[in-house]
Every structure is written in C-alpha cells, then in structure tokens.
Image (cartoon, rainbow, N blue to C red; front, side, top):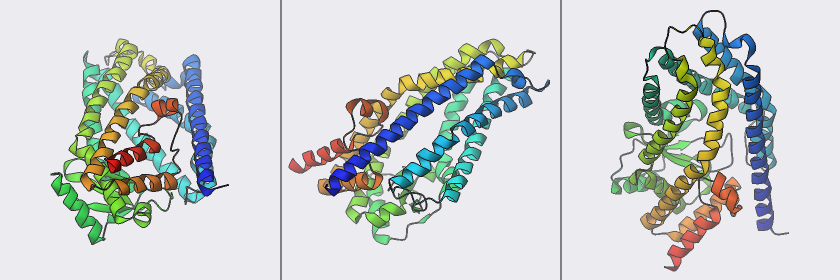
Length: 367
C-alpha cells in the first residue's frame, strides 16, 4: 500500500471523525439549551433582588455546565484525535493550560458582551437594540485591532523574525502593495501542533505578519513568499473590511432575534428582570439555528475571497510551481482532505479544497 494512499485514507478518516464530533457537539448543545428552555433554570434566573448577580449566576451556570458536559468530547477531539493522527506535539498539561486560558479569555469577553447587552436593555431606552448593534460592530473592530498585541500573546509566544532574507523579501512585497506592516514575527506553534500556519493580522499600527515556526522549518523560501502573497491579497483587496461589512449584516439579524425576545423587558423600572434573564437559553438556540442557516453563504463568500488571493499569490510571485508545492506540503502537514464531498465543501469549508487550489496553479503554469 503506497504512502500517498495511506495519507489520503488517514485524511479522510480524520476529517470524517472531526465532522461527526462537530455534529454531535451541535446536537448536544441544542438538546442542552432546549432542556434549559423547558426547565427555565428554576430559581437561578432570580438570585435575590440584584439583577446583575442574577444575570451572571444564571449565565455562568449555563455556560459552565455546558463546558463540563462537553469536556470529554473536547478532550477526545482536541487531544486524543490530534495525537492519534500525529498532528499534535502538545502535552496533556499544556492542553489543560490552553483550555483554561480559552475558558478565561472567552468568559471575560462573553461577560463584557453580556453586561453590555443587558445594560443597554435595561438603561438604553427604546432604541437599546440600535446601541447594541453599534456597540457590537465597534467591539469587533477593536478586537481585530488588539488581537495581535493583546489576545494572541496569551496563547502563543512570538518573536521578531531574524532571517534577513525572508524579512527583506516579504517587506518588499508589502511595500509594492502599499501596505505598511509593523513587523514580521515567528509564532511558536510547535509546542502544540505539527501543522503549519501563517497570518497577516491586525489593523493599522498593529498589522503584523506571523509565520509559524513549523512553516519556517519545513517550507522553502519561495513557498513562504507564496503563503505571504496569499495573505497580502486579503488586505490589498479589502477583504477584512468587506468581512466586517458582512458581519454588520449578520449582526442585524442577530439583533433582530434579540429584539424580538427581549424588547418587552426593556427599561430599568421593570421588576420582572428575571424573565429577560431566563430567555438566554432560548436566544442561544435561535441564534444557533440562525448561524446554521447563514453558514453556507458565509463560507461561499470566504471561498471566493480565498480563490482571489490564490490567484493574487500566483501572479505576485509569478511562480505557480511554488504555489503548487506549497499547497501539497500544507495538505500533507495539516492532513487536509484534498477532495471532500461537494456538499461537505459547500456547507463546512471556508477555503477551497486543496485539489482545486492545485488545479489553479496548473492552469497558470500551462498558460
């Protein structure tokens, strides 16, 4: 049995298992949240006469119990499965630490969003929903700007890249595209994974290039240029701002769901604040279904953007052979399924299948 066939078989099995676990996780969440809707959380939605204590006790119990319920599945999906297919370098202790960090950071951000939502509901007047929409967009932009300097360092170490050949060539490419970057960094992913990754993240003064140490160690110079040229395309084409615009449209639908359920409870003078708090699980279920409906459209737009950047990368580097070898190497290192079922790609994939990306390089090479 050839090594290529074994790799393809492993990729198919790996992604099939990941898909099944994802679907199980979705069903578990819907059943869990539905149980809270039916049960109502008993007295947790009203903890004395303090609406803020009641809100955070109720939301905290809802979130924490769900995390504990799905912890075994998270352990299997993110630790056991990754080691089984030799994609992970992560020790069990580091997995726990990263998990705890995710809980803390996610809990803090969710707490800020929740506090803002209910503060505007209770004290924002009749147009509370409009302030929520505006605030959510503002928070999205702020997080996009702060991500490389505030959030990413919590999980991964990085340092300025000291390879002059790489930094000079990538900086020159950015200059040619009239894009200012604040630095090129090596991102230490090898403690956690064997997969390669790269990103051009941040806004304005915080825009940085990150190349994973796994990518730097395994890829040739020309292939690294291809990866960067692809990421550069997202900025030259304004994809970040276009996605923020898409987020504004999606946020409108989300706020419409919030307004439908919560508007009867707006105003600080109402005594039945527990009713608004007890609606959290029902809102979570409805937003979950809405996300499932929107997902294919969002992924289709994302795949279109990725195809545009693939073409830009080949044109900018004028090296379709390097693009082809880059995609092949990424598929091998990340155990990507090169040719998923069309429905799976349509619904779940935000990048084109590797087979299509390699075919694009072959088209350019033949032309």
